[in-house]
Image (cartoon, rainbow over all chains, first blue to last red; front, side):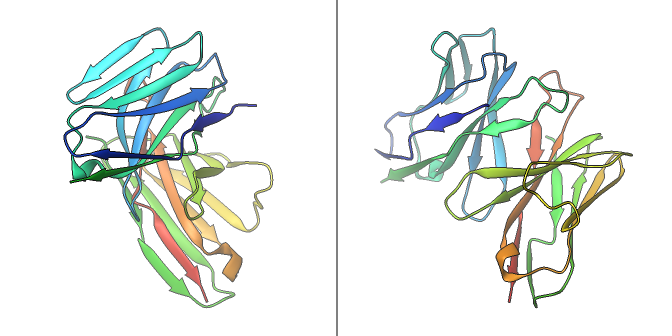
Length: 112
Length: 117
């Protein structure tokens, strides 16, 4: 079955870049997504990438996709304290309902 | 942007009570909605897929008689936790898939914190 893994924790200083990594197993996934979850809240869609793309940039966010290695990363430039949250990568399954399979989540802590 | 409204945000009730949670897509139609459960410091666990006008599809190990799902319209799905017990206490999150976008994202509600005493 599908399996999505992430490192559990990342700590950076304000102003640095953060890189959150994700590995997935379903090579037939059409889209891959990054979501942000703040304490006690739902998930906010940050960005997505189509499987035939290598890179996508959206303001401070850069997504890199290595389809051969099934590796996805999210780079946050000029990280701010407000970026502290849990970040989930997710792949869409290639089934009728296109369910999402979520990674384990990476807790990002940004210190001043 | 696409907004999904989930209510209530917090429920505290006695054991044996049934609790209904609503999930609404406010500015788009959603033929498919999803219900998740999240344990502390863990990822989301998909419970069921809710389809407008038909029966929900439950994931393995999820009791369909315990967690009743109704998707009566293109903008509303409800989850009813029947005869809730303390072990049902959790954070429940819904999402709605926006088929109007080419990448068909799931947009999430803010979650419901359910506490059973």
